[in-house]
Image 1 (tube, rainbow, N blue to C red):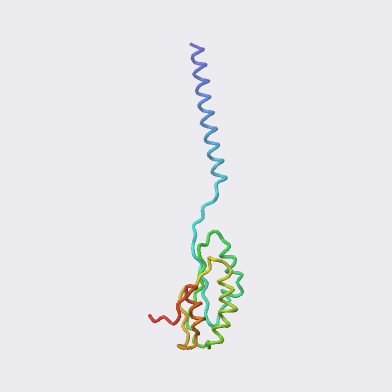
Image 2: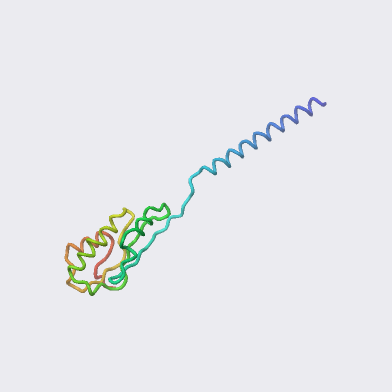
Length: 138
């Protein structure tokens, strides 16, 4: 009888050690797995008097480099009715183009309200290709 008890005890110990080894291995695998991020979109709002959110492009770059950010949207707020044709072109060339060029994650969203007739076809087309609308009526 004692030999049977001894063998049974050894079997139980072997099974327990296997269970413990497997469970430790699973915990180790969990620690080395890549973290899961819930992605979100980031929006930077600007207007004709306030472009600090999008220029210089440091904030946009930091957001677009984050694995937690899916897209970075640049959103015009209010109207741009004080802008003349040359102001619009300057804004596109010196502010918007560099901001959009930071990353493929950066896109336009929202509507630019300019005085009718002042935006060139070239500028309007570029804005629309980036995701904005121009002088959209509600």
